[in-house]
Length: 158
Image (cartoon, rainbow, N blue to C red; front, side):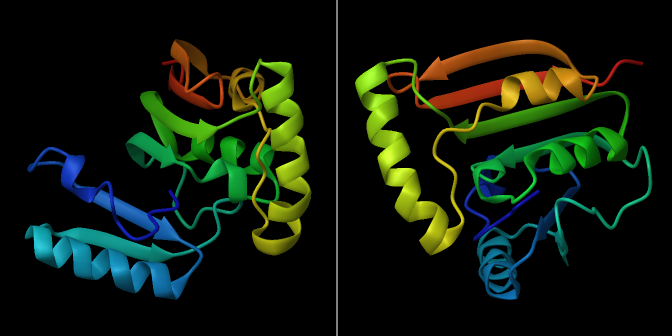
């Protein structure tokens, strides 16, 4: 989900079947080049995270790194992640979030006034409650970088 330039492609096990999705043809072109440089066979598709072009229960794992912050409707994207995961499937998220340190959160909200207008990027979203509300079971949640980055691992109930 939101494969971007394919920076994470080298982190998947060599035998993993990887499908990358992005809204931007330019990003997909860069991801295709990165996959070729890595010698990886990757399926890349243009599409919207809020309306995934895949059948229900078609993936074992969904990975989204630094993508939720840019989706206009993060709830819809998380619901779509739930839909395309098989029962027992894993959701892995990494995103920047609103810090629990008030001065830093204030600065993030100020920055967000510009990033939303310029590139549609939210600085202060918190996906944890949305992931839970979508029906996932949280298996790991970590806040890093003064509370501005969150890593979540969740499972779709079997």
